[in-house]
Image 1 (tube, rainbow, N blue to C red):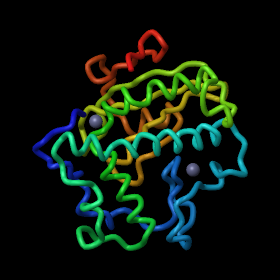
Image 2 (cartoon, protein in one colour):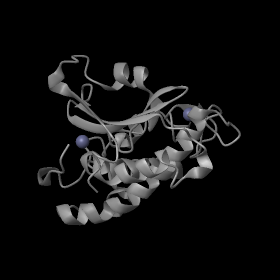
Image 3 (cartoon, rainbow, N blue to C red):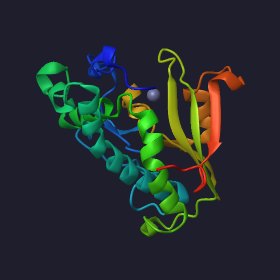
Image 4 (cartoon, protein in one colour):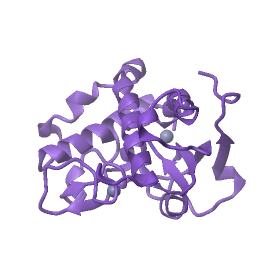
Length: 220
Ligand SMILES: [Zn+2]
Ligand SMILES: [Zn+2]
């Protein structure tokens, strides 16, 4: 959704971070993988660095791209006239229970209403990756990429933007700003799962747009 002055850049769920279950959450799939590893902000066993699956490599690339983008988001907040995000995630402003929860809340705030901008900002890095000009270390063969724009499930019910990435092993959604809906929203997931869990079920052409991302459609 387009940034909006009326919200002051504060995500609606910001005041309730402790309504999400605690525990170590995977940065890619957002599942809790360790109830006792409260302060970990890493990957689950399926997606960690020991794993060389195509999906795991996509997860590692996705985290790099997300970090690249979120580092730029503070200047977009300035442009919107919103309070700096770091003021919002100070512990006294919200009931956080651990340093890892504070970290997740940083991502929630930083990514808030930045999805349209991410479509513009990450198109070129993704194309560079597809064409082997950047991020070669992940050794990912990307068959096709799409920008997807759709209406999110209730209670969010807003337009949202993400990317679809086709690999040999399947179609995945890379959602660099989905964490704005809470820490349990995945950065990477299979397209079919994402479609059923995150997108409004009414799949009419009015709430789903898919555009192929190629050098011709990228105006950065
Ligand atoms: Zn949005
Ligand atoms: Zn995972």
